Image (cartoon, rainbow, N blue to C red):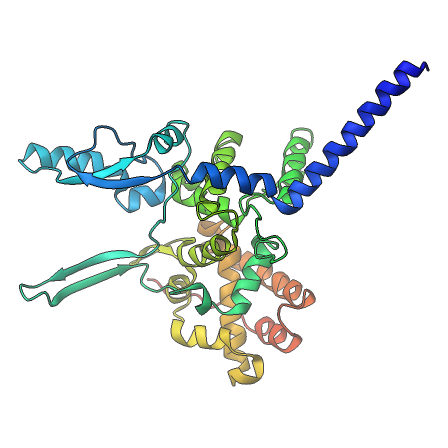
Length: 364
């Protein structure tokens, strides 16, 4: 080999090594993502101003947007204006936000997880009040640690790593790479397991804003990842507050199918009440206590079993909470053993949970 070719190969190898180091550093620190995405997100602003806005883009197809009525606002406004009503004030989007929405990404803003209606009388005393979901965790600090740890173990293990303050919670590169390889392999062998590489952040984007609450194709997955990434860096390069908010929002809003005489079920606490008839205040107390403090090991084991089961059920809620209850029981047993092996629960709590079975509420 000539000196010239040796020099070319040496340069190529050096560049490849340097690129590999940069990629590895970025995967570990999210440094460039944090810098660029936080700068980009800072320009995605909106404000309310008098009168009707000349141009607004409303969401159209996401389950959250439909349930909250956001997708129906243009129709509401048109019918009201036809009856003599006027829009006295409306949101305005910055040019950057308009461009962001035109690209097809979801709007980044502080989304409500708890809604309702309060009717007041002439003295402003409440006549009627309704909230949905009915039950929720008020703040991250109120979450039982075992619930947080179990959720992360099942869905997104590295989400709350303190060693990565600028971490992008929308992308788990290891899981994502495995999912891509599995998808490619399934084209050759359909029996290959093709579990996705979704993080909590992309799952929330999916069940809130993707059409039908599902990922139709690779383009929709990219849409979820980009939208979740931008949302995560709205508060700056340090994402721990956003990551904790993701955990809280997920546990308060995760869809858990629909139940007779109740309708759609969202959130872990509503799920415990609707599907198992569990007293949620007692459940929170039991889950927040150590086995020695709980006083009732069987009750603590039962509530933990129910909570873990609902975390698993989200993957196929209509099946697991319907005809697949036996499968859900088996999968819950397996996950409880894994949680104990990982040190998240101790052996007595594991055994207490394994000694129970899921008893579903009679909905008929």
